[in-house]
Length: 457
Image 1 (tube, helix red, strand yellow):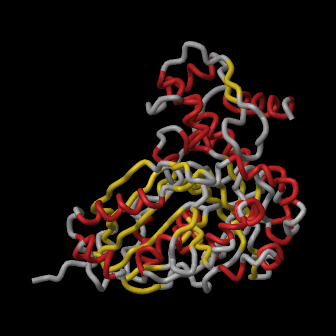
Image 2: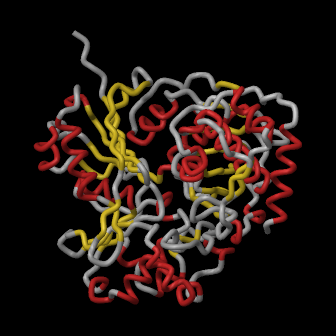
Image 3: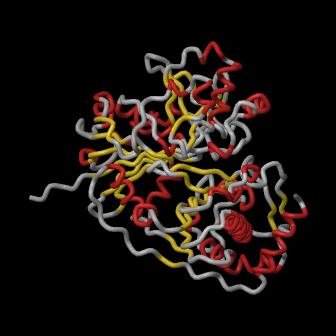
């Protein structure tokens, strides 16, 4: 009788949703998953990430999961700009939510302490999108709490610790506009050292490192094997980027990673093109190298424009363009046009499908703008929800001056999970080319949209 192949559990904690999935690397596919919407809870001092609720949901989901006895490894993935602070006993003191406006209270004094952008490639962002500002706020405004801090855990590594009992730090999470890392020097920033935060960071490990086996209490609560290992974990956009980097590290290419954020990452991109005032930055890949990056809060902005879950259609897009309906940024608190108030014109009477088409068109125009700002070359890969949008890829292909737009098969995520877990996997399926949409008036619409942006500058 054949022994069933091992499964990998991928815990993906995004800003909007959390998902646990079992993937079978031998089949190259996902075999089970559960999902929940994330909540923000109001703590005594700040809005906080719902780490207690997510953990309770995770244990309950695993306890009822089919074939859980086959899980050989867990790979944590989580969003950036987040950390959890714990005391010397491992008691969680606070898990700040980066969208809390309290962090803006220290903006001016914090700005004077930051390392230069040329060293960290981390722009000065609003609210708590720079993790350093979160830490400074707590240290300067709530020092009684901060004096109890013994450990600062980046968010993916927080989940690795909750599952394994082993604390670690990892560079993709640390290098995500935190102000705490200098990628060219491969060291903590002057700010992190001067404020004493670096000494609270656990030892550095690669994303592929196996930290240890499951805590006995987690194994008992879930029914997962006690032999199941937990890997160090990775920043979520970097996990998307890794699926393309694995085979083309030395090539120029661009990844559009979508979700709550739409993040454009340019492999072999020129860091000298980065503009701090346009929310451009360098993420850090699993090998420690900086990645030229531009982004906007695409998922949030799409929802604000579409106001519905309907899919767009080609006919709906034609109607939107014929009416000259137009959405102009910004509809969220971050991105290249942060500070501008978003506006929607000519959208009166649009139905749900047409609103979705307007949101898709806006997303394609914004993404094309970011791709051009990075000066990228080579193929353009779309990952995440925008890869499943029936119009986005073809619209983007029509809006960028050069570069073939391609979509990775669903099995690509399984291959990345296997790589992170140190298990063999099937080779990825063929990439799917997306033909640029040929539609009269689209380039004129794009030129008008960009002209309107300049008028509002």
